[in-house]
Image 1 (tube, rainbow, N blue to C red):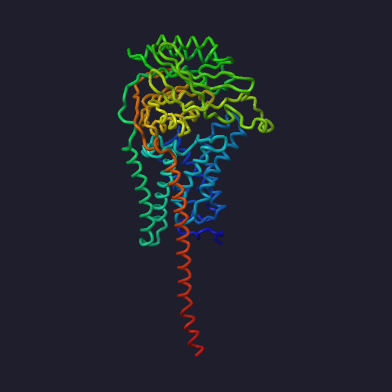
Image 2: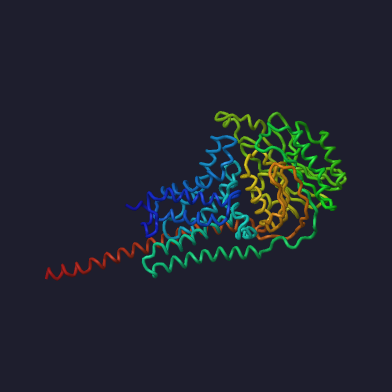
Length: 534
């Protein structure tokens, strides 16, 4: 029996009871399109398979199929989380999987599900990136497209547009394959194949448009920069690492700049987040004088990540900038804190559920736009986790940033999973805003990335290493920087609505067709009965 409100199964639809394994495989394909695995193209068959799984299913079955696909995506995509807390990591994965479950549940099971699924996926990804606790954009589908041909479309609509394009392409691919495999006649194949090809053509059009869209222009100035990576053991918590050893490692690495700058010293030196950790105010710290002297000796602007204890319950996470003369000229306090990493939401409640000793202090939330006005130029700063939030790069660029920097600290992650995803996020920020980008991490990855998302140089993990190279200061504007996420969100809502209208129309048409066929079948019998009655 067909579930109530569900479209009857069609040739090629999985039907009830046979969607579990394909749904999980769809999620795994999406997961393995992400860094550090790849390749990007795996996302398309993954999206196509998920589209196919929903055929003929009622709302509860669509919800379950989406949740299974979400588990396939986020169990590998967020696997790093269990290294900090097994139970917390598993809960995170289970909750994040609900995003796909909701998107699938709100998509129709028959005609129109391709458009609705693409729109719903964008809307739930936007929700996932903002709620709960400010959002969790790691493991997002867009990260897998940073090195693919769709990446340029981020100039048009940011990461959310990439999510939509993946599912439009997936639905188009699924429709074509499904029609050809389940074909009963060429007449029935033509419509679905043409619709699928139209979707694929639309995605290709966005990719070409993105490749030619405004991208920050040719640049107004070349700037020599250095990203300093002190090196060290990875996979250790902050309490297991001596702050003095981190600071010393950064000083030693900075001393090696002259050996790699080829006689062209940098005008900007970027240190990582938390390169200097203090239990006293930075203004009264001897390290402040050391950093000022370092900027003077290199005759360069120096940006440094500083954490300082503010009280018995809180600390501050900042980026400070020294001018070439040693003066402190700018500072920015991190806005997007890592929940359960840098602060505990509702600490009193969660203290009853687990030990919170790993996060003894809560980071204070900053409120700035991330712009550091320095002698090297106006620099937009995204501190570590912030690079995964598209609005942080856009806010800084709108404020006047001509270069983006990402001082970060991923040393507590033992594997390359989070550092690789962070590089992908930096690439998307560079593309979305049309700005070159410098990333610095104490144990990697550090990188130089151009405004088109190409990685010009990248360090190895754990090694002491310095990247010195040329980037361009840029003042152009991308469409995404001008308009943000709103156009994509509106278009996604319209796609969701259009898909349901198509589904309702198709249901009405099929109902009329069944009534008409039943009438045709009963008319001869009625005529014969009337003749007999005569």
